[in-house]
Amino acid sequence: MNGRLEGKVAIVTGSTMGIGAAVARRFAAEGARVVINSHVDDGAAKALREALGGARSLFVQADITDAAAMERLAALTLERFGRIDILVNNAGVNVFADPLELDAEGWRRCLSLDLEGAWNACRAVLPAMLARGAGSIVNIASVHGHKVIKGCFPYPVAKHGLIGLTRSLGVEYAARGIRVNSISPGLILTERIEAWLAGFPDPDAERRRQAALLPCGWIGEPADVANAALFLASDEARFVNATDLLVDGGRSQVYHD
Image (cartoon, rainbow, N blue to C red; front, side, top):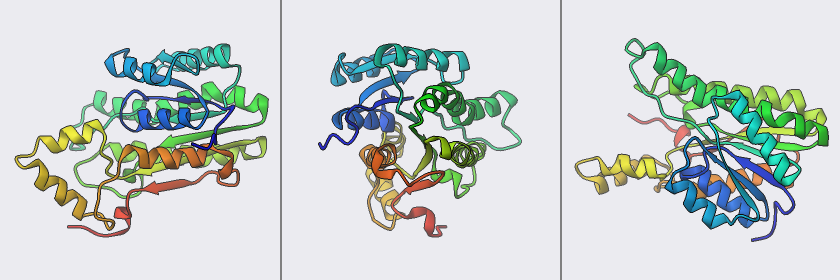
């Protein structure tokens, strides 16, 4: 690796599995000190802690829907590493339901985890970033924030909102040294997607079908999103702000039955 984040301190929420874990590993490999996070301290959290090593990483168990918990996460980061350069808002959840069958709790759960949680984390780290006059925030949005798929309500509502939050904060704080961007992944082979594919009568056939929907002909991996996050978090993207980067193999640009 090239040390593209050497000397930087990054917080990655929802970082013990899937895209978040890939981002945390890639950032650490590029020289960053990484604060990893989950709402549970489980085997996945332990494995990632061991992989990253205790000297240059910190695990903080915290629920992103709890604003006070996010403030504590930021405070512990400053206490341990003295600065916050990067925030990657990856934590979230899929909530898919018929609009009129979705209850109030399901609506609140989706919006609190997929939108409000990102704002809680942003609000917690922004004072430290503004004090230094520098910082990069990367929100993990979704292709659902660009194209609406029937049967996926209310997830697209939250992801459209997250892209809006990205643009609004990026414009608000650009002159004070803060960049805010987002990434919209398409189908990515995370543990959750692997489990979903395994539930089909013929998992290999479904995998081939999903790959055939993509112009590139293959399904993305968490590392593909991590690479995009690395660029946006690094100084190489110093003139990239308030924008969303699609990482979906081109699928959102074509029609499908």
